[in-house]
Length: 438
Image: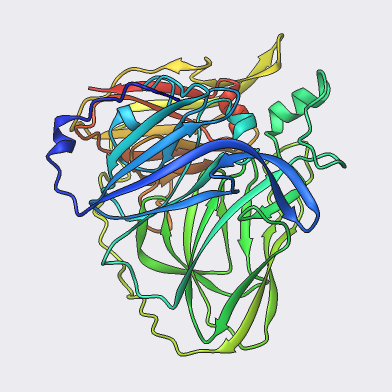
């Protein structure tokens, strides 16, 4: 087995004090996976499971992850949401793809607590849908005390009656899938259809929810029961938010405090209908069933202030860059997905330590989830209004004909980075850009 040349780790990272070295081996391969009793698909994934194994570390740890490629095509792994060196980000501008039979070692310090995930960044429209993803959890002593925890990875698949992955037909079906993104009717939680989620009565759990789907907008709903949002992409928010539903777009994560419930209750974990202006009809769908078991003692403690988040910029801060997402006609493919009127853009660089205030504009008639690699940003304005609460984000939804201002600060992790629409088919069709941090 051939091993790729390892990328040199930046000097600043070598000097970063770490608590421990946490090592994992991931093997990418094709395998049979039972998503329901007797219903087996030919999945692609890591370590023969779907999702791949959950990787865990504590803040300040060094993670060493060796990826062996047993697929018949190249792959690589992007560490979605992690603020790590550019050379470790797992994209085509910073790394040579891992060829069949090769091994590549990723090594980085994890500086932030939160719910993150990893996924393929080669041929994503096929590799991700077939299962090339998994959760990555970074914990910290400042995390709230909970009675339990669940990792909930949302996905869907487009399968034939024979449980094979479908391929879009020529022209019209291909154009529709390009327009909508690939959204299937096989609904999965942690790689399973019709999952059962057990929770003890009287207890409150932290549910770390990851939307790993190609294009599905998921409006999490617990049959009208209230829950608290306690974290988003970049970890804990300032104050818990009591809600009955929350939108989670492709690539986003939301941490929620669920419970307490009464013994014997049963209710659905579902997604409410969300109209994102596609050919698909929006509908309410059940992904899993929550069953409340016997009463148990609770030790939960969720403070009213989870963390302090200092604003990077005021709402009226001067804009340093404008990013326009749009859709236009294409003679070749029916439509083009554009960043600033072009596809696969090479954007101008940003300077370390120079505050960035970007105006994101969606001039199209459909939603787009904007994802920025390797950085956290703050939303400081949505269509002229301040956001409902302060949070660190790396993925955010842009509704049709909307504008948003985000603020972020480039640090000394110099190199090439990327931003794109996280509807995977839109990304592949050109709605992405690279830029350098100098």
